[in-house]
Length: 371
Ligand SMILES: Nc1ncnc2c1ncn2[C@@H]1O[C@H](COP(=O)(O)OP(=O)(O)OP(=O)(O)O)[C@@H](O)[C@H]1O
Ligand SMILES: [Mg+2]
Image (cartoon, rainbow, N blue to C red):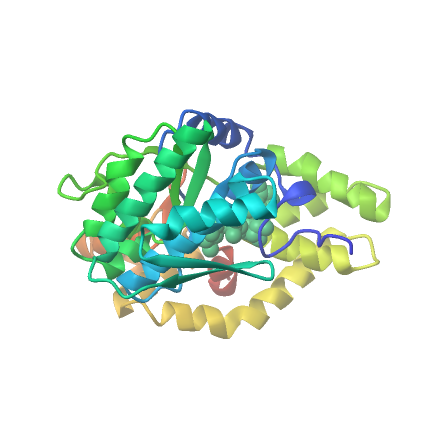
């Protein structure tokens, strides 16, 4: 089966563009077992970057995605299952692996079974708190890796769920305890709620305060996208796109990695060689299809925030939201505009670009309301 080009899911292999500096940085942190916090607005490529690096390295790893966990016991089970798979992958043969994993879990009130190709963990009822069980299993993992002289990666995705679920901070405390001392486990934390993640890692009263080295993911630049897209155009149509076509792709998507992929995926399904006009028609058709989704997302905002966001979509290219011109055109007071801007940034609807201008994160919102 041929791999999908410009996927909406993870970008791996030939679909992975650039991120050279971030790849180097993450690789170094993993090699030094330095805990890493990977941050970006939604759908910029955090999970793709970590998965891409993990695929390059020949190191045992556990991907622990906490997006659907509902309580502390589920977080604990997710972590234990991830570590179970990791321990299992440390050995080269199935027999050895089953033996090692069974031994590993024997003192932890957990029974381990290998069903088909899947690992099943069954937790025996115990009075021990989830935080304590997590601490014990992490400690055991560290000891095992020291003994085997191996390194491993624990990648926690949607990690903000821990703070949402476990308000006492005890699970975070257990993780900190091992993360700050282990020389064999590289912890990588990521998630889509930046506000919550920042409060977990930058509040001096929280257990994970200043634990991590931080990597920020930005959009991928035009300079890096250009050869990548042109290469895939050559494969598909045996020629490169005209500059106008390429510019249209960049203008509509504003180099947001998810939207570059959505738009290019549609274009690459056509037999026809894409022109500027085809790009524009394809994008605007997509905007119309997504209209009701965009409107329901905007419904989540207060009246003032929604009004300001729409005004920025309409006029934001020419004037900044706190400028005199903008305020008099939109009848916002300076204080209510700056309050709404602040919240829209925190909720990832707006961001400050390198020229210190406020921009809308989601290019679909901008296109829908732009005249
Ligand atoms: N380096 C890259 N090159 C090309 N496309 C990429 C790259 N990184 C991510 N993408 C694309 O961007 C989109 C988002 O990727 P991904 O799911 O990795 O982001 P994320 O930041 O983890 O998202 P979320 O906030 O929803 O967890 C996907 O369509 C993916 O294919
Ligand atoms: Mg992700």
